[in-house]
Amino acid sequence: MPPQATANPERRPDVETYLLPDGSCLLFDSRTEEAHVLNTVGALVWDYCDGTLSAEQIADELAPLLPEQPTLGDDVREMIEALAGKGLLQDADASPPPARPDVAATPTT
Amino acid sequence: MARAVSRSRITARIANSPHDTAGALRFRVAGLLLTVAGLPRARAKQLAALLAPFQASPDGQEPALRFDVHPRGEDDVWVVERNSERIAAFSDADLLLTQLEWHAIAAGLTATTDQAVFHAGALSRDGTAMILLGQSGVGKTTLTTGLIQRGWLPYADDVTLLGTRTATLEVFPRCFHMDAPALRRAAAAPPFTAVPGLPEHARPLRWAPPGLAPTAIVVIERDAHGPSTMRPISQAEAAAALLGQAMANTLPRAMVAEVAVRAAAGARACRQLTNGDREGALDLLDELGRL
Image (tube, rainbow over all chains, first blue to last red; front, side, top):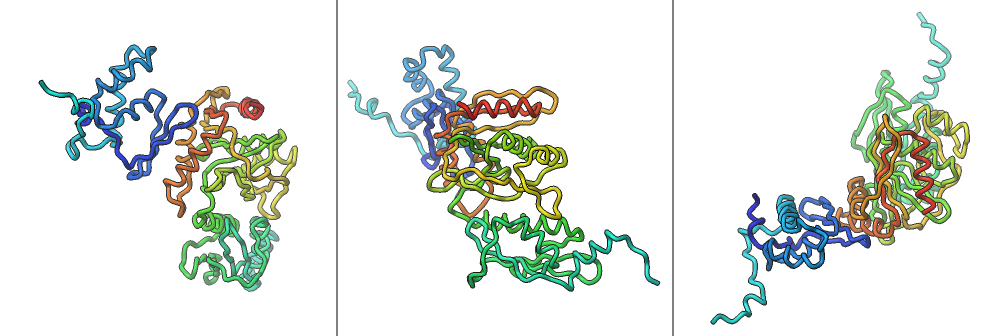
């Protein structure tokens, strides 16, 4: 399993994101000059890959948006692994993800 | 002792005679001014016909590119130089012409930054415009020719240009290169004109109106054993397919990706066509043009 799959996944900033009117999404990797196609669910997952959420947290966030997706948790994990496999996510070892602002702001008692 | 030769052989000898060469031909392809010099007069006439829409007037401007053709000794081999650098040699004069045509076309398309260039056919009818994408051999020219005979007007059968700033279609009036069955069909209902001396080439008599944004993008696959079928694909899939058929040129690929995305974003219909039977495929494409 790629290392990113267990860390908080984060989009590489040099991957151009194009959202199309029909809800699909095209990613253009400026390093490889390759295009990658995402469906609507994939586009949502990609949007949430900001380095602050784990795969499970992303699935939790998306659950209310995609109630018709019973296997959402597995789907999200697979998508993140696929994105990582294509090299579209930040290398988890290279840059540790920042803490989520809402978590960091939580006072400890 | 003199050897008897056939009349066609004599004709070929005269047509290819290096002792009767034409002056330099001038062409402008996608903005690039280039010349071709050194062709035997008869061959120069054929190349001029093949590239007629691209001919440039002698306005004194220096060409950016020069192709020079030299005969090599007595062995009927033609050497082609590009800006004094040898790039190819041909013993077949017909092949020499078609390769010169392609080198001229490719040089212009490689240099342009005003257009993104795609390996695709494109047509228009009644204000709609359709791009036909696919690898070589999937039937782009055959389907483009068939649609022309159903009243569509072509932008191109093989090289489609989309304006970099507008993502709209531009006419690229290159001759169609057709196989024998396609030529027979074209001759049966001829919205085409033949190219003298080059029986596998024909040029449509009318072209599509420039400046339309594609309303449909069709990705074609060939299946010679089944019926033709069509299924929807997403706009992102259409954009990726378009980008996959982009021809490498000086335009940065990121910009080509933007053009492809803009074209797909404006398309009302994105489809994958499995090209089985020709008439079935034409019916499906014709129907798509009415959406």
